[in-house]
Length: 448
Figure 1 (cartoon, one colour):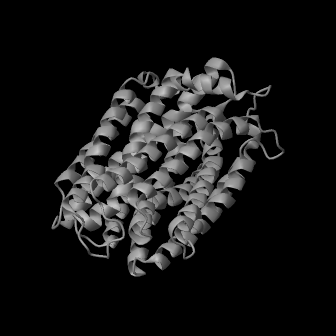
Figure 2 (tube, one colour):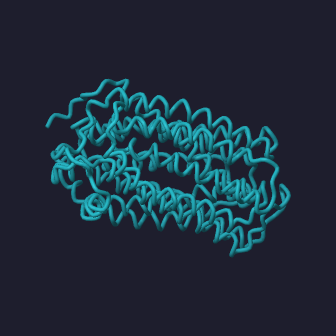
Figure 3 (tube, one colour):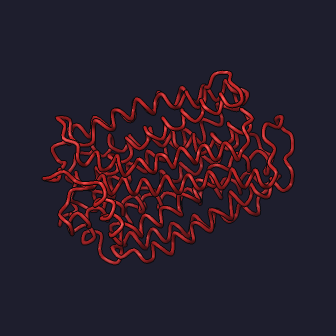
């Protein structure tokens, strides 16, 4: 099978821009939401973490249903576009609801936050599940799927700059209070509406490439098919540990920078800008190397780079030179770029392999199950960090500049360094067992 590009470059770009919208919102949530709820609104971190985890678990449970629903959809606009347009509206509304709540307290504040979290979770699933199904069905070329994913990861990097760099700077400039976070909510809502709308138009444009199943697919057999697909399940297991580690890093980084390293909130921007610029710059390198090396090997290399950089957070503290802070961020960006690109490009290969083996066009059912794994991992990471901070004595709502107990600082360090490094090691074990990587990239997708 030829690896020549079969889709116009505009499709690569406009499909990828959808990830700019979802990941801007996702990064803002992962990086700032727990900190906002605990330190600005004064909600106990264990309660806040549990609410975030509960919403993600709701999303996880609904994702396979969304995938089955999308696979069975028969509309004049195709199987994917209607879901993506609907999600654009839900996500655009959920951002200001979360970060710009009215002046509520106690149970009323918790109820408002819970509803906003559920809207976000539903909207994210409605977009992400059909979105991730598209590469396996709109191109037969495994290498073009890697190219598509490189555009996606590039926009993920831009989203990282917008959220982990620009957002903390804006919050710092606006004084770090509720008004600052409200501005972030409204800005991200607008970004999401535009970016997801463009991706939806791309799905609409290429709806003729979708290959619906000849008969209606039942939900239970699709779940069993996913569970019985060994390459796909190994990839899901690896992704579970990777995302659990990422959720741990994202949730604890604002605490670590401000309370362990004793740096201002705006310095999170140094990490975000450096890591994401390096991640962006590394995309052509990873794509070029992927033409000659198996994706499994490259994924393992990226995991090793990322895990070693994570472990060095353990030795960080007040007075660390900015040059070392930047270097660590750069190495993490290099590893994250390869990890994201290889992991994401292996997904449509595994889905296409199963479609070739079974003859069933159920791409969204597989991406829905994959998304279920993603959300479960992220939920467990958020819950674990919230519980860890609470158990180790983190004091919610302290005045700005007040010191946390030493035990709370230890929990923060564990969350940003040790927990994600262990998760990375576990994911490497599963990637090493992934069978499709032992073949050439073209052969891995021969069933497409």
